[in-house]
Structure formats: structure tokens, C-alpha cells
Image (cartoon, rainbow, N blue to C red):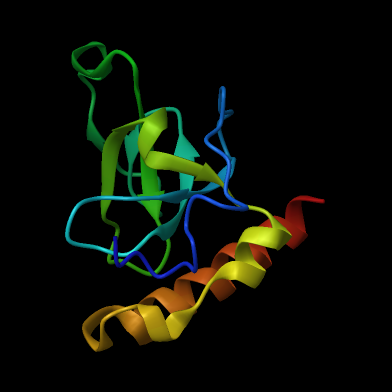
Length: 119
């Protein structure tokens, strides 16, 4: 699993539950683990509602990816990990493909900023 995090599972715990506004690592096949924010609805960073049919996605939560052109996805908790200082320390940008490296590094920095603002 070339996921952009050294030993992605170690030091990264799957959340038992999430809350709106929580910063998480999210994973979609073909991409590295990516910082995202849990949202109540399918919205963009500008607050535009992208989709209202939330009932279709029972058991999944909408996450909005940092630094990814307003992209988001409905994901199960099994594809999320808690975004912690330890997980940031484990993050290895060199494990990401060159295609995503700069974009995901910027996403991590944006997520860290957002996290510090909330505390």
C-alpha cells in the first residue's frame, strides 16, 4: 500500500466515530492518504451544497479534501484515520508518487493550520 505514510496503519487509528469539522486522513484507491475535513453535507470549501441525498450514503461520511480543487467523497470510517501530531510525524512525502507529492504536502500544511485554529 503506497499510501504516503510510513507504516500507515501503525500510529494511525481508525476513528470509532467522527464529528463535523474533524480533520482526518482519508484514503481512496489510487491516491495517497490525504488530509480531509468531515462535513455534515456534501459541500465545497465555499459552502456550496453539491448533493443533498445524504440518505443514500448511510454508514459513510462526507469528507472534503484539503488542496484538491473542492473534491470530496462519501467514505466509510474504515477509510479514515485520526489526524494527529503522531500521524503527521509519520507522514513521508517521499512515499507519495511525484504526481501527488507537492499537492499532498500542501494539504498537510493546510490541515495543520486548520487544526491549530480550532484549538
